[in-house]
Structures are given as C-alpha cells and as structure tokens.
Image 1 (tube, rainbow, N blue to C red):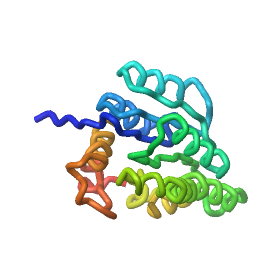
Image 2: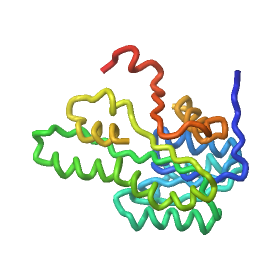
Image 3: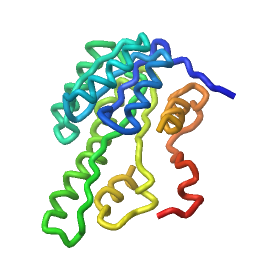
Length: 202
C-alpha cells in the first residue's frame, strides 16, 4: 500500500542537503507540499541541483549554504528561514563529516574535534536556536544518525562516536516521523537499515 503525507503549509528545514539522505528527504518533503529550506556546508552545484529538484515539484524553496562548524552561519540560516517563511515546523538535522583516521594518527584529535563539531555539536546548536519557533508550531525535530553508531568500523572511531551520540526508504521514515500520524512518538530511536543489523554485517 502506498502512503502519502500532506505537509501543505508546513516549513521543513533540512541541513546537510548537499549529499546523501538529506537530499531525498528534502525532495520528498517538497513533493508532499512543504515549503523547504535546503542547506549544505557549501554553496555548490550539488546544493543548487537539490534546490531545483524541490522547485520542480512546485514547492517554495530557500537555498542557503551554512557551515555547521560556524554558529554564525547556522544562526543566519534560521533567521533567513523565519524572514522568508515566517515559521519552522520541521527541523531535520543531517550534517555529515565522515573521515577515516586511525586513533594513532597524529591528526586524530583535530579530526575528532572537527567531526564532533559537524556531526554532533551543530545538531545541538541548531536544535537550541530553533526550539522557540518549533514550540509555536508544535513542530518536530528529527536528528539523523548512521548505522556506524551501532556498527563501528576500524579507523572510523570519531565518526562512530559522533553518530552514537545522536536511499528514499529512509526519507519516507523521516516523513512519517514528521507527520501527524507519528505525533505520539517522542524521544525515540528508529533504526531503518534494510536488515543490515539483523544480518550481522560489519
């Protein structure tokens, strides 16, 4: 059975929309009638492509680069969202900084700090500056993590630690969590991995 969601009148702010899951998430929100803010670390062609795909659905779109390691950038992102759309209903935190580095590497600590700042601290900061707007709209916060939070790999310890602290199939799970059908779900972890964990894959 096909399920569709109606987000007409809602504003979805999606970070990390240069690549990966955030791309399909932003597009699916646009297809479901939401006004969408697509934000990525860089103002590049990938971000513009995602924004245009959202616009092609007929959605109103705000495209804006915001470096997750700079609090000033994130504050401007929220301020511009409010200036453009006047509300925030859904915050999808999906920052990505994934670098392989051994704990014995001389650069480990600097890479660790950068990874934590992008994947975890930016998420916390975005939540803190959006919560006043989300309280008004009785909105939703969805923090995207990774299978690496439960299935660590060699030389990925910093990334795995950051993710444990927090495809289209995954995007549909995000839409469900943001919908009224999931209004009674609060403070939970939803594992959507296509059987990866059950199969015992590394």
